[in-house]
Image 1 (tube, helix red, strand yellow):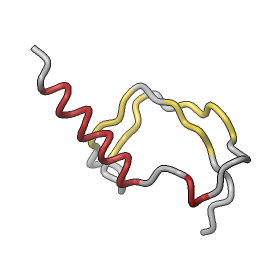
Image 2: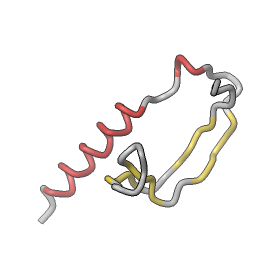
Image 3: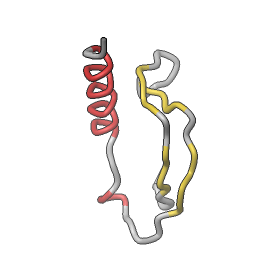
Length: 64
């Protein structure tokens, strides 16, 4: 599969999910824009999404 449509996606949070192959799930995702100005070399990666999820987990663990 060759990706050729780049979407900007907003979401409320990102969390671990054993249900999905990526191991992650977006909560309340919505498409904000089709990004015709971007190419596949400039998009965020699964690794970046995992880092976001880890940051969220560590910041919520420190809440009282």
